[in-house]
Image (cartoon, rainbow, N blue to C red; front, side, top):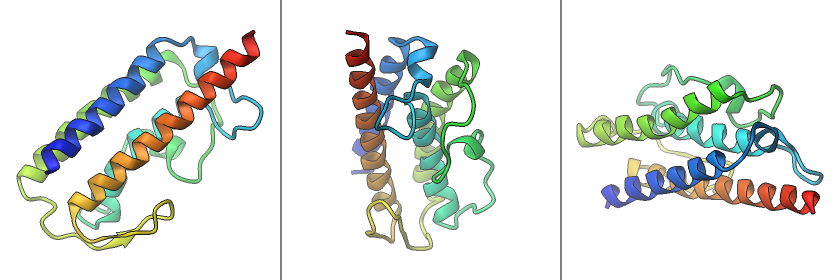
Length: 158
C-alpha cells in the first residue's frame, strides 16, 4: 500500500517540477490578484511539509533539521525572491526527501508514532500510512493552487 503512495507523491512532485521548468523566475515569484502566495512558495511548502509531518509531527525525530523550513512552513508567506539556485535545491530536495522517508519506512523508523491531526484535514493520523496519505493530498492541493496561479498569470498576459 505505502509503495503506491510513494509513487503518487513522486509523480505529483515530478509534475510540479515540470510546471516550474516551463516558467520564468518572474512567473514563479508572481502573486496574482486574489492569491496570497506564488508558485515557488507552494512548491517550497510541499517540500518542507512532508518531512515535517513524517518526522517532527509524529515525534519520531522532533528536532530533525529541514532545509528551507523557515521560508516555507505553514504560516509563512513569500517574503523573498526565489532565485534559480533555490528552486534547483528545492527540486532536488523534493525527490530526495521522499527517497529517505521511504527507506526509513522500510527500515521501521515509523513503527510507533505520536498521533496528531493537521489543521487542513483535521483527521487523526495514528500511523505513518495515514500521514503519507495526508501528505499526498496536501501535495496535490498545493499543486492545484500552483496551476490556478499559472492560469491567472496567463490570463493577465492576454
